[in-house]
Structure formats: C-alpha cells, structure tokens
Length: 235
Image (cartoon, rainbow, N blue to C red; front, top):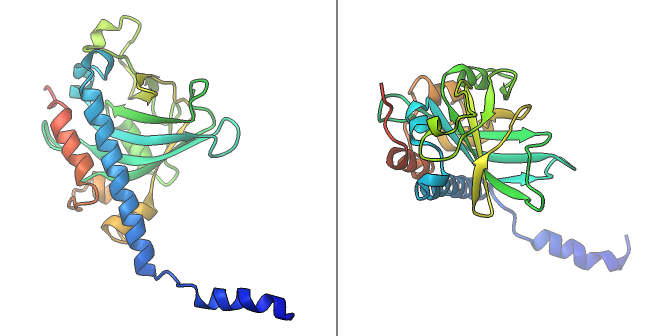
C-alpha cells in the first residue's frame, strides 16, 4: 500500500456511521412526508369540483389510493414508479388505517414533457382489494377492470362512461386533472414500509380488512384528509 492512500483511509475511519435507529427515523420522516403529500392531493382536488372526481363516484368508493409524485422513467424508457397510501372504507363515514402501497407500469400515459404526476385510484368494489392482498398483487385490467375516470361534479354527466369498472384512475400534473388509462400497471402492498410503521409482523390484510392496526401519527394526515374531503357513502 502506498502512502498516497493513507489520508483516504484516515477519513473513512473517522467518518460517522449511521446507526439503524438513524436510518429508521429517516424512513419514518419520508413516510410522514408521503402521507402529507397524499393528503394535499385530496385537498386540492376538493377545491376544484368542476374538474375533480365526481361526488357520486366518491360516494361509491370502497377504497381510495393516492400515489403522489409518480415518476416517469424509473424503470427505463417508458417506465414509471410511485409510492403512496391506500385506505378501505369500513362504514358509511369511516376509513381503515391507511396501508402503504407501490405502483409501477410499463407505460402510464404520461403527457409529453411531464416527468412526475399524482395518481388517484377509486375502487368501486372489493375485487381489486382482494387481488391486491394476494402475494402477486393487483394487475390493472387483469385482476380487476380499470378505466380512466370521468371528471366533473357528477359521473352521470359523462355520457361516454359506463360506470361499470372496479377501479377508476386519475392523474394530476402541472395543475391539470384528468382520467388516465392504467391497464397493465401493477399495485402491490409495500411490506417494508408497513413493517417499519406498524410492526414487523403486520400484513396488508391486518391493516385493511381485519381492523387490527390502529392509526398513528405517520398516516394520520392522509386519514384525516379522507375523512374531511371524501363524502360519506350513500346506501
């Protein structure tokens, strides 16, 4: 070994090392920020009813997922990837503890010049949820029907929409909000995030279906936004 390398060895030895606790705290801060960003998407959509998700569609929602800051090109040309949260409606006015999810796809129809967008998924039945909780996750258009959602105050005003899909998908980029085609995209439970936030033995089923997991400060911003901005289910 030459003497020229000694300064680098000394610096490496003196450099502070991050403890597992430091890394976990950083992850939790990232998850809190994600929850806040997802809440902001719902808040901003509620402020533009003429250009947002129709109220009658939200009233039918069995579950809602928000993927803030979906990134184009994460998996190469045409690829896309994002992380967000999903909650299931447990009664007319109540929502489950939110669960962390990942969404990726070969091509999600990004507009020209757009590298990031927010996504909202409205589940109108439990077909998509059941597929999501399987080991392979949910593949849009295969495990559950998916369609670009109508925009406006009421879904019935969109005469070209049959309103028979299990999932309606929306995108928001550069201030514009619209339905988006998601056929072939995959949605999966983010076990790593859920274990760090709720406990290592917690599953997506425990969170969404069994009601075993209580909400906490990490996911509270998103849950509060659902309670505030999504209208109660109509029987």
